[in-house]
Image 1: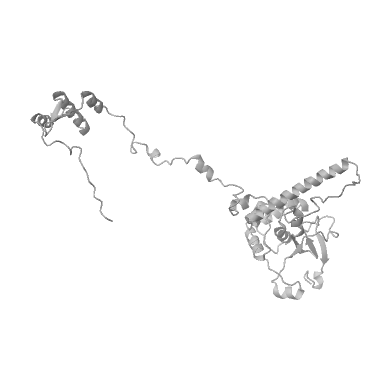
Image 2 (image 1 turned 30 degrees about the horizontal axis):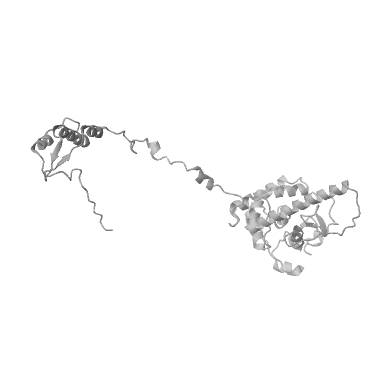
Length: 364
């Protein structure tokens, strides 16, 4: 680096070269004031003012000297200002508190601005279940995050028994099939859930069918699969619950919900809220219509019929969303029977039995 040159000039650099003999004596005489350079300068100038009102310069002109009042005012000492060294050590290094605005700006906001992608705080705070992609790798990640050990999800391209036995690792704890959403197969439901079958309902307007299907399979494995501490506690807690009560407990199970929603995008959250809002408005409208039909007598209208909002579906309506939706259903063996565990059903449905004494398995 280039050296920096400092130019220093003294306080008395502009002193006149010609001084009187009297001034020389006064400057040489020892001062009675304290040894303070600033006070010495003030006192000498004050004494000089009392003796000679003006001083001749080299060109013969006279220059005025400060009056006694100005000199006395200059002698007044100002109040001392505190220095860093004079402060206690506890105050030297104490950080000043941040202003309230900076503290408020660091507070996380839900929901985040629309132009931003979904943040981790959005996914943890949102109370719904997002619609995740039908990808076995995503389901395997969910299982690992929940604490399930040595269990993975694989995609099966054929339901042929020989193909499954030859290409799918054993044991197989259950199947998850993806169906087009529709009302079907509700006639053979059990009157009540058997005690040896763990089954939970899926609450309305929640896209949790994929994760719930895996939970319904894992909860019916006695000692064959290690499901982790959190799921073990949840199973013990809901052991004597009804399917609907288990569904309510699952909907408020934040541990699983945060893992499920870790795959959510901002549009998934917005679409979920929009779908739930439309279902609530429709339910309220139908309730009002039902009350009105009970109060008013039914009359045949002679006016032309108009299409109601519920009979015409648009691409953004809840009816259109439900008609194009898909749904996951689990099939799992419990004891000597195979059960269909559909979260939208009230009770589990038996689909068949097998005899292990004759060498039969639930896959044959």
